[in-house]
Image (cartoon, rainbow, N blue to C red; front, side, top):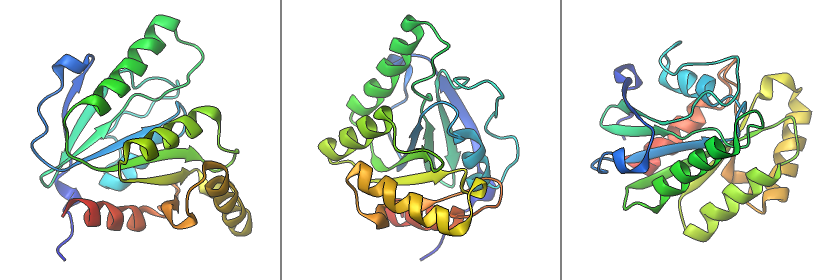
Length: 195
């Protein structure tokens, strides 16, 4: 099976309301996760490009839905959720954007739900995974920041988080945007879902 050429990765557009979203015409991979989970860094690692996805020191920076195009596949970077330091109104707008995106008729080939491996699954992680399960959407959970833990602790946490979320261990990929751990495995799953 031919792979996806990540060298072609490019930023397509950013949308602040659901009404602006373009029609779904190609396979789509949506990336969702809490603010500060390392979404931008992992996407950059996946694309093999340092600054394509803007990485911010301030969590909650991705306030819009950002579309990237890679070799005929759309990567949809959803706003990070659960960031405390924004207004209730802004939080609601993000929630509406995320739910509005999923409510559309789109080509949901794969949703990558990001969870920080250093902590137990949080309420919002549970809600996201429960939503994906109830909606019957194909998904994988990518555990981020694995470089902060030793090998055995990584395995322990991966098993624990899978248990907490009520999913099979093989639905979980341990990743690090620092070392590139798990990136090939994520690419393999994306290829399986999209090609």
